[in-house]
Image (cartoon, rainbow, N blue to C red):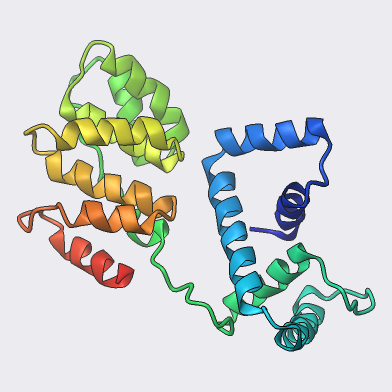
Length: 240
């Protein structure tokens, strides 16, 4: 997150937006899952701060601490203020988090920690299907947005679990959660070799959205026979 987004979040929560700005912001939230996730995190921080600083004396001490930190790390020439806006609390708190000084537990695992898509190898030598070759090439290059239309073209005539699986991963990488999760759920309810892999990536989808409880519940359904079960155990330990 950045300071500009904190200001935007605060304006929305404080009811300071015009009707047009409010509608535009809500439209962004519905379309941009990353923005929506950051907004939920911001609201959680605000709630924790409100709970933590129930008493004015503690609140003043914390405000002074944040002012010192923000002066040092934001390099601002503005004079110190006594009454700080909510976004200012959050922005300063983010610095503390980065330096390991914040007293809340933000040591949750992240999607990036486990985001290691396997190499796609579904194109056979001599294959003339350009959409199939395009899907494999762009996927393996990490160009997931470009891979998606190739997969969609292939799936019109070749709806195999393998193609569905790699298509869903591309969707997940682009934060298109509903579509990705629908495919993962379809695969995990089947009997193909992608059953457990799909379940693992469904859990990763929840992790990327910071839905830790749902992530853990899904992980607990994965069989110990899954080829990368050590990753499942590691993630479960980090979520405890």
